[in-house]
Image (cartoon, rainbow, N blue to C red):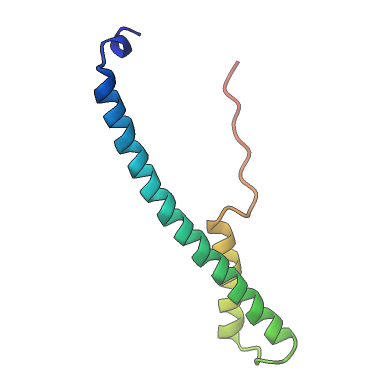
Length: 90
C-alpha cells in the first residue's frame, strides 16, 4: 500500500496511457486476425458445399484444404471447447 501512495499521479497516468495505446494496437491486430479467420472458415465451408453439390471435384488436396481451413481456423479463434480449469486447493 505504501508504494502506491508514493507514486506521482502524473507519472502513473502517463504509464496507464502508454499501456492503453499498446493494448489498442494489439486489439486492432486481433481484429484483423479474426476477420481473416472468418474469411477462411467461409471459404472452407463454400469449398465443402461446392464439392457436395458437384461444382468442384472431390480431390484429396481440395478436400483436405477445406477441412484444414475449417478446423485450424476454428481452433485458432477458440470455437472448440476449452479444457477444464483446475480449481485452486482449498
